Image (cartoon, rainbow, N blue to C red; front, side, top):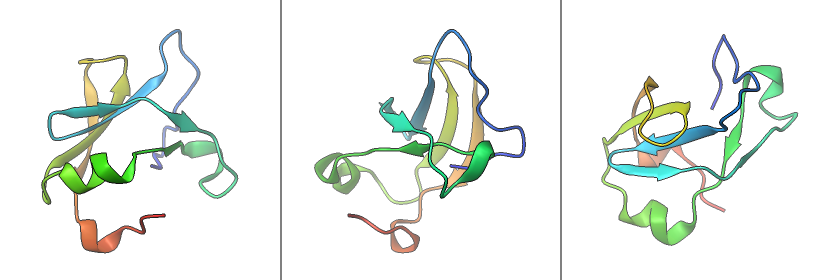
Length: 79
């Protein structure tokens, strides 16, 4: 995930929300630069997500999130 504002350090780590599921495992990576974070979603969890689910990132579970559009599984690489 990348954002012009980045994901600045806070008391609570960022959380990726896709539909009604939340994922909190992430790392910083040179591949996304200083304005991004790489979230890890297990394959089984990814497979269970509905295509076109709303994708958002926020701080802490059920917190206010910034929306990044809809999930398009065809556009993502799964490793």
